[in-house]
Length: 323
Image 1 (tube, helix red, strand yellow):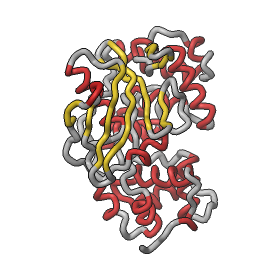
Image 2: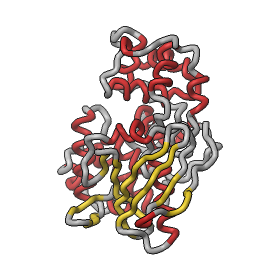
Image 3: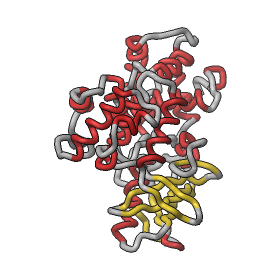
Image 4: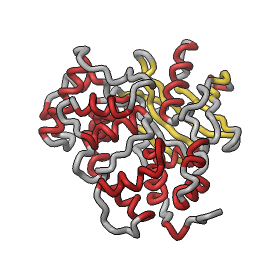
C-alpha cells in the first residue's frame, strides 16, 4: 500500500522546499478537503494550503502549492519565517509529506476495485486523490473524541476553539496563526477550560486524561510501526478511557493512514455508502461493512472517495460507470 519515500528535491527561491510525491497525485483535489477552514489555523484557498507547523521548539507558517502533473507531480513548501537550520526545512518537508500522504502509493487501488463499477468509476474520476493525515496521532485522537455523537459543524467549531485557546501563536505579516496544542499544554488545562470550548464534561475528562498520560510517558501514540496490524492498534486504542471502536477506527484512519480501517458506525460514511450502493436507504454498520468488504485493504480510502463525492455534489447518476 506504500511506495518509495517522497524526498526533498532541494530548495528553491526564498528557501522553498521542493517535494516529489509518489504518483499519481493531484494536489488541488487532495487539498480540497481543507477548503473553508480557518485561515489562521489551516485552510486551502486560491490553490494554496496554509498551516502552522511545529518545528523543534519553534513555529513556521507553511504555504504549500502543487505543480507538475498528476503523473509527474511536485509540491512546493514555502516556510515563513525560513528555518535557520537545514534540519528545520527537512522537518517541515516531512510534516507536509505526512499531511498530504505524499509517500502513499494509491496506484494499486484502481486495480483492487476494478470489479466494483461504482468505485472503479470514482477511482478514475478522483485519480490522484490521496487522503490527508493529521500532523500527529494525538491530534487525530483528540478530534475524534470531540466529534463523538455530535454534528461535524459543531465539532469543528469546538476544535477551532481548542486550537485558538490553547495552541501556541505565530505572528507573521500582521496576522496571528495558531498551532495545534501539544499534549503537555492540554495536560495543564482544567475541565472547565475545555468545557468553555463547548466540550462535554466527559469528553474534557477523556482528553485531559490522554494528554496527561502522554506527558507522563504512560502512553505513546506516535510510534506505531508499519508492521503492526491495524486490528492490534485499534485494540490498543480502545483500551484508553473514552475511546470506543468508532473513535479508534477514525484515529487509525486519520492519524496513521490505516486505509484498511473503516469507521462503519459513522453516520456520514454510512450515508455516503448508501447513496451509491443502497439507493439512499438507511443502512446499519453491519451492512456498511459488508459493502466495504469488496474494497479489500482499501476500505478507508474507498469510503473517503464516497465522502468527497458527496461533498462535491456528485451522485451515482454523475458517474461514467463501465468505461
